[in-house]
Amino acid sequence: MIAIGGAIGTGLFLGSAISVKLAGPGVIFSFLAAAAIALCLIWALGEMTVAHPVAGSFGVYAEIYVHPWAGFAMRYSYWLAQVIATGSEVVAASIYCKHWFPNVPSWMWIAGFSAALVYVNARSVASFGEFEYWFAMIKVLTIAVFLILGTALLLGFGFPRIGVANYTGHGGFLPNGWQGVGLGVAMAIFSFLGVEIVAVTSGEAKDPTTALPRALRWTLGRLGLFYIGGLAIVVGIVPWNEVGLGESPFVRVFEIVGIPAAAGLMNFVVLTAALSSVNCNLYLMARMLFSLSRGGYAPAGLGRLSNRGTPVVALLVSSAGMFAALFVDHWFHAKAYVYMLGSAFLGGIFVWQMIFVTHLAFRRRTARWEKPPMRLAPRGPWSSILGLLGLTAVLMSTWWVPDLRITLKAGVPWLVFISLCYLVWRKVRSPKISDGALQDG
Image (cartoon, rainbow, N blue to C red; front, side):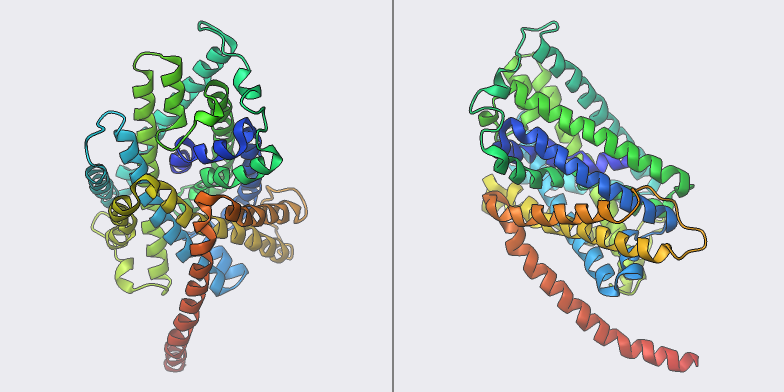
């Protein structure tokens, strides 16, 4: 349920509008392609997580099987991406609130939601789990109802039949051709980012060997149904050329069909989805920064725990994205959400790419083990190779999506910067390691 909470957020409920604009009804194929890549990732990550259920997860795997630079760059890139993405989520939450309170300034919602969720995460892990469980439950139940109601509207069960007119009209099922479908995969991938939360929390699972593979499969299966089924209904009811970022496409569905109070209810659900995603991201970021500190990659103060056992200092530093959202919303306002989303995208893509690279190295090394670890992916390296190639194509495609061009503009300099930071860190740390070795000897 925690993984569902981390993955179902504004990427689906608001950001999917970008994919719809690019692909039209063909967005269904865009999300199918993204689901296939996510499935390959689940296989790779599941195998490594069962073999090594440790705190820090994929950053640790990369350090062990690829290179210390890979672990350093992955963890910091993931952390920064989530920091920025969390800022985009609270901006989205402020957009949703304008449905009811159009005259209330956005910064008030951003500040209020941010303070409340930092407080929740500063309490115990049990408090986080209970809070997130109910957030996720609201989303899952409502999407299920949405799928049932949307199907009834399309087929005419109890409502005037809408049929397939919106699938074939307004330029056809592929109004921008297969190129539009391909470009739409980028935002679809962003919607699936978050499934890796299962691995990040694996160090706290009681029985990871049994629980994690099941949780990974359950998470991806539900997300595939909700994303692909939900968007199929959206583009069937709402003409694709009427979808925009001014409100959630899912809320727009109920405004068009005119069901009393349903639009407001759906807006409440997408609001809880955004807040749930922020809640999960804060949990993830604090523990990632905590892991960096305990591993000697970040200041020691970030590795301290409160009396309740939570990394409060790391949590407060990780909430910087929500603080930044106040200024980005003031400067860019109408494009604040997309600007922050695009800035965060490369971090997520880079981490997924490195998970595939790490899995390829993991497979080669564990083939020599006396007792090989559990296998989830098909035999051979092909699922990870295809996933890696698919993500590389998606990353390059962002240059032709005007709203996501910031991904490469900001992302590539970031990777150069973090690589330089790693070299400096190694140079500063090496004398200390040598001195310690001499004293020990």
